[in-house]
Image 1 (cartoon, one colour):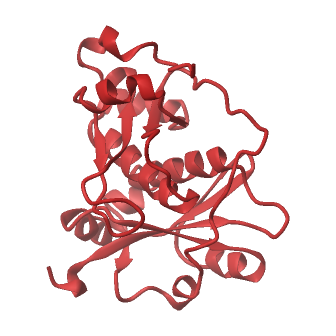
Image 2: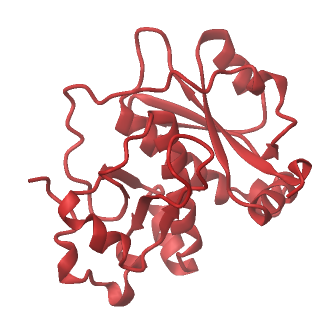
Length: 235
């Protein structure tokens, strides 16, 4: 593939010194940002539509960078959408050529996104869309944010217009949780949308990193009993 034909979706997470977001908040904000862009008229029929179509044609690669202070303010001046979710702020920009990032984004660091939830327990996810992380794969927060964005996009593609409307009415709410190891294999083999990583960074090519789950994505609207309960309680 010609490198000049490749596109990437930039995601920028705000990480101010001394006040980083919680990891789960950042992952869910990234998923929400991707969904918000895909549902935006500018990305479907407007000024971003050509870039989005070109990006989707060659893959849906995403790269997460971090910004703070003046860096973040410069990011806000570029075309994009900012999602604020509890402690996290993530800005998504329309896709750019892999080798031609805007300078305001290219100078941002990719590393340094090793966020944690600390003592905060995100608890069981609410009913609705849930992105289940592979419990056997360790990923930096930036990598996991990109993977959550992939899974959210696969879920969006797999959702029919009526269910999309209901999801939209619910604010495109999407939870991110680590799957219970007891259910992961059944979940990953269930036929639900699953992210298989290309292996550019951190994980082996073909690794199954995230499964997208939602009531409307399950055949017949019910979960096979082997998966366990929807809320996937940890043992």
